[in-house]
Length: 171
Image (cartoon, rainbow, N blue to C red):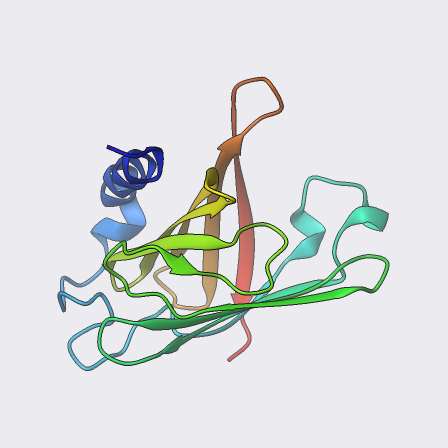
């Protein structure tokens, strides 16, 4: 089994044990809900004040947009404005079945595999030039207004790093 597949399988096991996943309604096989609705759909703004870095190094803004892209697919847009002002806009339209998908214009990853084990949970395994760089679990809180990202990635010649980031729905 390839490294990406093993990491995605492990992440799905972790996501399936999440308390937020347990609260999700077991609706549709495609993860977007019986009528295509999902609490993930919409636009989310990162609370940069909670990032574990000096304020001057934090990005000015990070916005994720998740939109339906047809049966079992999702449009994912990530817009970042870094502290010095440069902007990055990355885009992907993955199937939610774990099939590797190209990610355009991301400095972090060129390919991702995505699954949605519950309507309020999205799991991403990201790679760059064939190397797994991170696994991320996005979970919408029960109020539908907040999104928690749990990211796991290799440390610099050390143990794995796990961090949480917090988003608020902006539409």
